[in-house]
Image 1 (cartoon, rainbow, N blue to C red):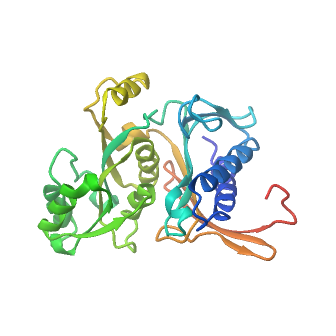
Image 2 (cartoon, rainbow, N blue to C red):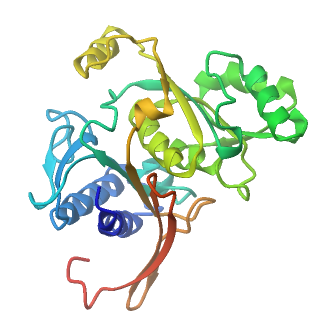
Image 3 (tube, rainbow, N blue to C red):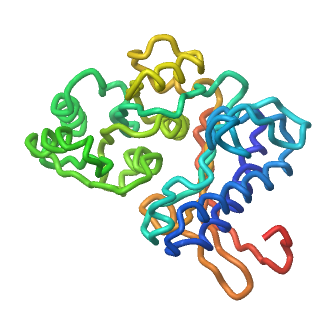
Length: 317
């Protein structure tokens, strides 16, 4: 996969971030999400690729654009698959809270799992604990393993978990183990990535969230040498049928990181609101400032990009 595509795709997340950031704190989730979707879809047409959306805004009958199976790009260049979330953290952006981002993962054809839009149980750690975790074991057992590798006590660890009623027993067990918890309202892609950053203070991610976000997070962790495992958690027969429609026959399968995102993958994200992962969009009289990250699994390269966007010279904005 052409490495220059990484910089082309970060232009896409930049535009989506700027568009959705205009809706920050205005309380309208649909408007924030729609702004990001419209901007991302428009900008994708400028990228020289033959792209297929494998993770997007839903199935074709549910989403008018960026739907699963939609063809994007200029129609010239390499054939690729794209997993995207124009605005991860729709609610937190609409409420003016931290850690919303615009995010994309890109892989060669067949490299990204076509995950159904259902729940997935997840566990994620940084590179120092790769190969240590086992999602089939208890949270306590996984915390013991991580603490041993890090040469510390469980009490010194911090787990990050979505603050949801479904996680009440998980949170109870983590607390009883002595581990600290960082509860978040939304955004488990950036939460998973936080485990790879020694300065984040986060050691491990637990919990159940969207399966599509699991694939995007796995692609990001592949680029930096982290680890991720997931198990689909259908809530009803419709969820099971949706998974089978996507080609997943074994619903109880434990997906390893290189089954969710294999081969050479790219990952890029732009901050929408301020967060521990990326600063948010800053609007100025002349335009806006964005902060993005671009990562490649093939080389392990991580680029942090701060860009000044002059609106008088970029009519798209």
